[in-house]
Length: 152
Image 1 (cartoon, rainbow, N blue to C red):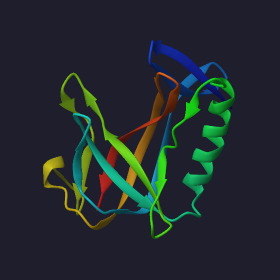
Image 2 (cartoon, rainbow, N blue to C red):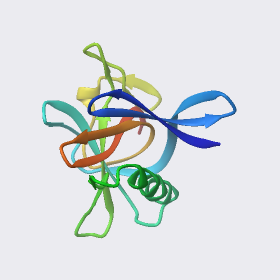
Image 3 (cartoon, rainbow, N blue to C red):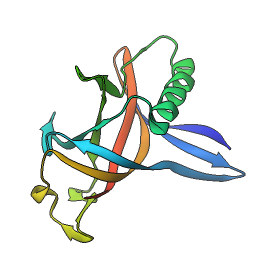
Protein backbone atom coordinates (compact mmCIF):
# COMPACT_ATOMS: atom_id res chain seq x y z
CA UNK A 1 0.00 0.00 0.00
CA UNK A 2 1.34 3.45 -0.90
CA UNK A 3 0.23 7.06 -1.01
CA UNK A 4 -0.77 8.51 -4.36
CA UNK A 5 -1.18 12.27 -4.87
CA UNK A 6 -3.09 13.70 -7.82
CA UNK A 7 -3.31 17.37 -8.79
CA UNK A 8 -6.97 18.39 -8.93
CA UNK A 9 -6.67 22.18 -9.29
CA UNK A 10 -3.93 24.78 -9.10
CA UNK A 11 -4.33 24.91 -5.30
CA UNK A 12 -5.53 21.43 -4.35
CA UNK A 13 -4.20 17.88 -4.59
CA UNK A 14 -6.16 14.71 -3.74
CA UNK A 15 -4.46 12.14 -1.48
CA UNK A 16 -5.25 8.46 -2.00
CA UNK A 17 -4.12 5.15 -0.61
CA UNK A 18 -3.06 2.99 -3.52
CA UNK A 19 -3.39 -0.77 -3.17
CA UNK A 20 -2.74 -2.73 -6.36
CA UNK A 21 -4.49 -0.53 -8.94
CA UNK A 22 -7.23 0.73 -6.60
CA UNK A 23 -7.24 4.29 -5.27
CA UNK A 24 -9.17 5.13 -2.08
CA UNK A 25 -9.43 8.30 -0.04
CA UNK A 26 -7.86 7.89 3.39
CA UNK A 27 -10.57 7.29 5.99
CA UNK A 28 -10.06 6.92 9.74
CA UNK A 29 -12.31 6.24 12.70
CA UNK A 30 -11.23 8.06 15.86
CA UNK A 31 -12.65 7.24 19.29
CA UNK A 32 -12.88 9.36 22.41
CA UNK A 33 -12.44 12.83 20.98
CA UNK A 34 -13.59 16.01 22.71
CA UNK A 35 -15.52 18.77 20.93
CA UNK A 36 -14.93 21.97 22.89
CA UNK A 37 -16.76 24.51 20.72
CA UNK A 38 -19.45 22.74 18.67
CA UNK A 39 -20.18 23.86 15.11
CA UNK A 40 -18.21 26.93 13.99
CA UNK A 41 -17.65 29.03 10.89
CA UNK A 42 -14.09 29.58 9.67
CA UNK A 43 -13.30 31.47 6.46
CA UNK A 44 -16.91 31.08 5.25
CA UNK A 45 -16.88 27.29 5.84
CA UNK A 46 -18.47 25.18 8.55
CA UNK A 47 -15.99 23.36 10.76
CA UNK A 48 -15.78 21.37 13.98
CA UNK A 49 -12.65 21.46 16.10
CA UNK A 50 -11.80 18.22 17.89
CA UNK A 51 -9.34 17.70 20.70
CA UNK A 52 -7.18 14.59 21.10
CA UNK A 53 -4.61 13.37 23.58
CA UNK A 54 -1.07 13.84 22.29
CA UNK A 55 -0.27 10.10 22.41
CA UNK A 56 -2.75 8.77 19.89
CA UNK A 57 -2.56 6.44 16.88
CA UNK A 58 -4.19 9.06 14.64
CA UNK A 59 -1.60 11.70 15.65
CA UNK A 60 1.22 9.33 14.75
CA UNK A 61 -0.39 8.64 11.35
CA UNK A 62 -0.76 12.39 10.67
CA UNK A 63 2.88 13.06 11.57
CA UNK A 64 4.04 10.35 9.15
CA UNK A 65 1.74 11.65 6.41
CA UNK A 66 2.89 15.24 6.90
CA UNK A 67 6.55 14.16 6.78
CA UNK A 68 5.90 12.27 3.52
CA UNK A 69 4.06 15.21 1.96
CA UNK A 70 6.70 17.66 3.18
CA UNK A 71 9.24 15.85 0.99
CA UNK A 72 7.10 16.58 -2.08
CA UNK A 73 6.65 20.30 -1.38
CA UNK A 74 10.25 21.17 -0.51
CA UNK A 75 10.02 24.86 -1.41
CA UNK A 76 6.83 25.43 0.60
CA UNK A 77 6.16 25.66 4.32
CA UNK A 78 3.95 23.06 5.98
CA UNK A 79 1.07 24.44 8.05
CA UNK A 80 0.42 21.86 10.74
CA UNK A 81 -3.04 20.30 10.63
CA UNK A 82 -3.19 20.50 14.44
CA UNK A 83 -2.49 23.12 17.09
CA UNK A 84 -1.13 22.34 20.56
CA UNK A 85 -3.38 23.80 23.25
CA UNK A 86 -2.34 25.07 26.68
CA UNK A 87 -3.57 21.79 28.19
CA UNK A 88 -1.05 20.00 25.88
CA UNK A 89 -3.80 18.32 23.86
CA UNK A 90 -3.97 18.60 20.07
CA UNK A 91 -6.76 20.53 18.35
CA UNK A 92 -7.69 19.46 14.80
CA UNK A 93 -9.98 21.39 12.45
CA UNK A 94 -12.44 19.14 10.62
CA UNK A 95 -14.24 20.59 7.62
CA UNK A 96 -17.91 19.85 7.19
CA UNK A 97 -18.16 17.93 3.93
CA UNK A 98 -20.14 19.92 1.39
CA UNK A 99 -21.00 18.75 -2.11
CA UNK A 100 -22.83 21.23 -4.34
CA UNK A 101 -24.00 23.22 -1.29
CA UNK A 102 -25.42 20.12 0.38
CA UNK A 103 -23.99 19.13 3.76
CA UNK A 104 -22.81 15.53 3.56
CA UNK A 105 -21.39 15.19 7.08
CA UNK A 106 -23.72 13.19 9.33
CA UNK A 107 -24.28 13.75 13.06
CA UNK A 108 -25.77 11.01 15.24
CA UNK A 109 -27.03 11.48 18.80
CA UNK A 110 -28.02 8.23 20.57
CA UNK A 111 -27.89 6.49 17.14
CA UNK A 112 -30.41 8.92 15.62
CA UNK A 113 -29.34 11.31 12.87
CA UNK A 114 -29.74 14.96 13.87
CA UNK A 115 -29.14 18.28 12.16
CA UNK A 116 -25.54 19.42 12.19
CA UNK A 117 -26.83 22.69 13.67
CA UNK A 118 -28.12 20.80 16.73
CA UNK A 119 -24.62 19.63 17.65
CA UNK A 120 -23.74 20.40 21.27
CA UNK A 121 -20.43 21.77 22.47
CA UNK A 122 -18.22 20.39 25.26
CA UNK A 123 -19.05 16.80 24.35
CA UNK A 124 -17.16 13.53 23.94
CA UNK A 125 -17.72 11.67 20.69
CA UNK A 126 -16.37 9.30 18.05
CA UNK A 127 -15.76 10.48 14.49
CA UNK A 128 -15.17 9.07 11.04
CA UNK A 129 -13.02 11.37 8.91
CA UNK A 130 -11.45 11.43 5.48
CA UNK A 131 -8.19 13.03 4.54
CA UNK A 132 -9.24 14.35 1.17
CA UNK A 133 -6.27 16.33 0.06
CA UNK A 134 -3.58 18.94 0.31
CA UNK A 135 -4.34 22.64 -0.01
CA UNK A 136 -1.68 25.00 -1.35
CA UNK A 137 -1.64 28.77 -0.86
CA UNK A 138 1.34 30.89 -1.94
CA UNK A 139 4.34 29.40 -0.06
CA UNK A 140 2.33 27.25 2.36
CA UNK A 141 0.46 23.95 2.24
CA UNK A 142 -1.43 21.64 4.58
CA UNK A 143 -3.73 18.64 4.87
CA UNK A 144 -7.49 19.01 4.38
CA UNK A 145 -9.62 16.81 6.66
CA UNK A 146 -13.38 16.28 6.21
CA UNK A 147 -15.81 15.10 8.86
CA UNK A 148 -17.88 12.20 7.51
CA UNK A 149 -19.76 11.06 10.62
CA UNK A 150 -19.90 12.04 14.27
CA UNK A 151 -21.45 9.86 16.98
CA UNK A 152 -22.25 10.99 20.54
